[in-house]
Image (cartoon, rainbow, N blue to C red):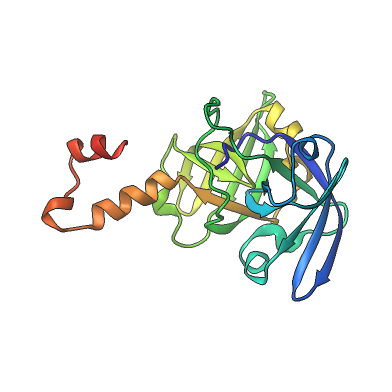
Length: 214
């Protein structure tokens, strides 16, 4: 489990084909201090397995399914990626629950500085079917970053990006039209499943939601 709080921006050193998969090698100075072979690591919101770790690099293999269903398909040498290690048990949950299981690939519509301010407004077009899980002021993961939805217009959402997030993530390297990984709040998907269950003992009530931990 991750929190969507990016620890480091890594740089793709190489992308190569190996036995039907793609292997990426990422340059990183911080997360490699704690990584061990086989550990999970979030790469722009995608949970991958760390391999061939050195003091300043690690590798990961991308299955064909991962390449087809995530923004990692656009990676090339020099691409910037957001990196996060799994949350430690007992630590503060500073963002929201992020699984590293991408629900779909959205499209960056625009990223512009707010007129008269220091913040940035990020507008993203969601893939078909994900808008039902998104609510105003709710949480969403974009490229592995925990963000808060400010506005919803059809299948487009707007989020406010503070200067720290703009500077400390790969958002500043993205361009209009670039694909971005989207993971909706997992609680929304569980709530939908409960709501669709029509059996008598599974009816959605306030008492049941409290019992289920919502």
